[in-house]
Length: 394
Image (cartoon, rainbow, N blue to C red; front, side, top):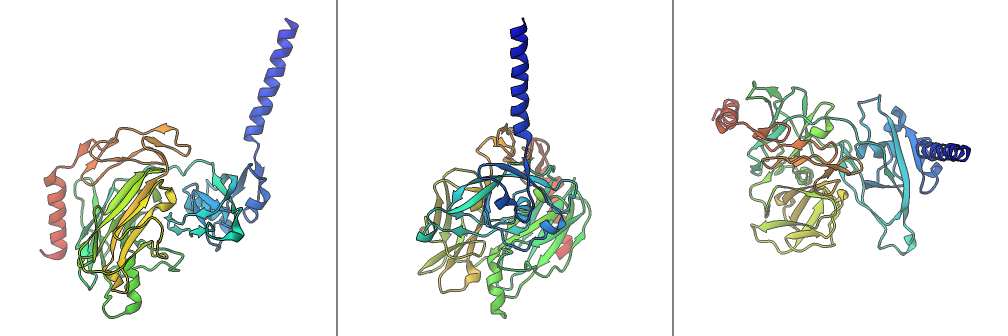
């Protein structure tokens, strides 16, 4: 009996030590977080306002290089938000060196691509780190972005409607903040509420750029993404694609949503005479790997491949490029959560399981926990058409 009791005490002591080791994290400063965190260890940092406002660039997506400011990267990775000051502590783990870090635009921050694979001087790569703390807690809103003249003429006028269940919303242009500082915003002529349509409040903006008279503005049309951004609701941001109707190339689908590690092919249809083509992502440098004339492939897609891809006609009018928006979920199919261990619900009517919180993101015209409820064609789309006609005197 005494031997059994002694074994119980030893087991409890060992269990306590193991549990304590698991929750014991090294506290590091945001200014030297990566260098102060031992290799293969998990560390914790508190992100105060000065750390959030770090001006240094971010390199990577999901996996970040040691040169990336940890707090700014935590915002980019959906671990903290700029407006929630009560949740500013993040945990991360130092990982093995990597040669390639994929850049992307997330949370209105653009990270850079860093590719050392072709440099003989960087055989060992650059130390990486990855966040292990939970994602921000946020329930998505019902929001839809609809366009009139989304295939527009040379004057570049098109109209975006954001239909949302709450009033506070801003219209943004999707752009690479590393190229454009500050991010270029097109002229917004109107931004007002036109009255409720069903469950939604419609707001409208007019986007306009005259690219025929100013050469410097022509490259700005390469953004092609226009966003409805609800206040303090980052996970509810919706991006629409709009570009010229006389573009040389048209995508087979405007937006493509896939799961991490899947094989993906983006395809364009050629509409005009073009000798040579150039693929780009988020207005970055030309893409040269895994591209064909009108297609680009990823054998094992990563989250960092997310973005707006353009196909241009080389040495021609770049404003006549075609565009496609690629969204890569952070988890495999049917899973969600910061560890991708939770099962997704069975979303109906084309709804997609949100990779961070598991809620169904519904296509326009549907709502409900599982996107099981439908807004009838008359009560929603007919009223929508009526409101648009009131705005533009159809």
